[in-house]
View 1 (spheres, rainbow, N blue to C red):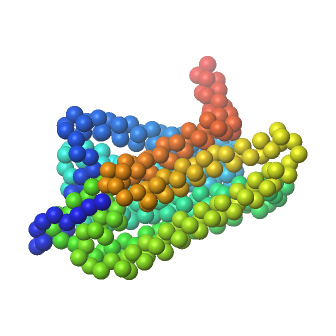
View 2: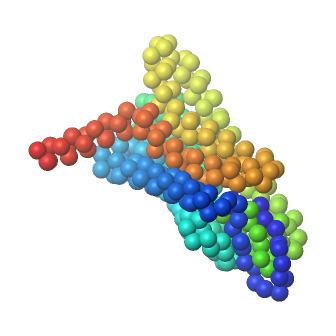
View 3: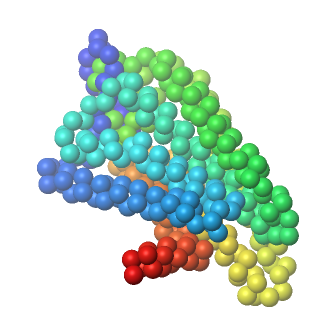
Length: 311
């Protein structure tokens, strides 16, 4: 959250004030956030590399997973590097163009994640409910037609929100009580009428949050119905386990997003924002590697080839 402080005659400047800690505390936060960022980068780069190097992983499911891992890297790189820089240098200032750029990228990537998770739910629905026709339905063209609009629609939506935000009247030094510049800061700090922006945000919540979550919910209702018709308990477990990784990520992402939007405390806002930004990108590689035999086998094949080439 944020608020206008002083100096109404100058151009707007944002003061990122996420954590009020002494020097030692700032160093601890820097180390923790840097470690989280490196874990996210290495984990998701590993997933992308495995999918690229291993032909058995070049399936629709892993095509979407590669998109998701790429998105997670871009997503955290929008906010964490700047916060790491602030912790390292103590320079809390962010310009108005930089704030809008960060806002645009943040909206773009978070919205894309919602759409991609929906596309992955469609993929799991087809895999479970129409297994014999899966390869025919989920062709490369269909996968691209599901993935590209996710990136494109999110980019258009981010452009609309950012362009409206650009026209808000902002003056002086604006305190941002978070670790990145978000839309709440602009709404609180502006002198302009924010009715149109608030309407856009409500439409955005419905279009990006409610509709995708309903589609995901509907797809899993169909999946559960199909799984329950399988007579073998082993068959039921094997079929549903193919969806467990995606379902885990969906629950984590939408759960943290809902928690973030429902809270009203400034302190909780910072903590929940950090969880929302880092939780799914950090756990996504772990969930898909620890609970996915294809990924584990791909890692084993690469290790075996490395050992064979060195021997």
